[in-house]
Image 1 (cartoon, one colour):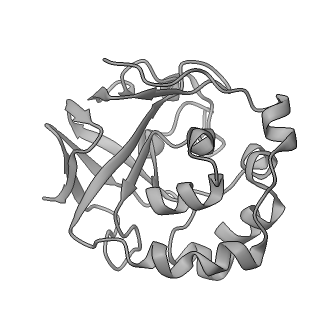
Image 2 (tube, helix red, strand yellow):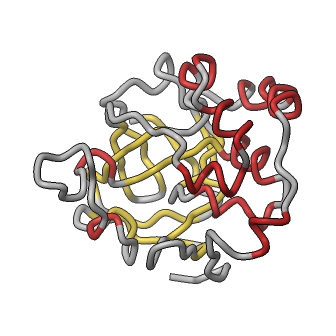
Length: 199
């Protein structure tokens, strides 16, 4: 697969010096986020996490049932939501609305720091994508799961406390501003610019 970007760290000077948006600035961008399409979205960014705190932006990626994104470390990550700490099968793919990630990052080069593998311009709310909804992305098909996706300490470090509070507020949870979780149900290839279509 073609690799567009380089690795990013979570503790370097880039994340320490970048100005974070305020709550008011984030709230001002909400209407644009809520204008995301309901039916035919677009895959705007594909990110692979080859190691902890590393990100690779891809032109295209293979999605498979064993790894989620081929070469990603999901299947090596411990989960607090499984009895034995193994990777959670319903948290294989993290998806964020691409308008949200663009707003949070301010600088496009920082979008991958969110940690989500797929940034899609699509309405992610339950009313539009309830758990069990399937999306075709290129030749792959994924399924939205019921596992919540919340901002963690690294998310706060990278985008600020106001951003953390914004995405995890009652309104943020309603609109899934932090994103949603999904799993691969049909392996295939997804490319940047592909349509995200309900099936």
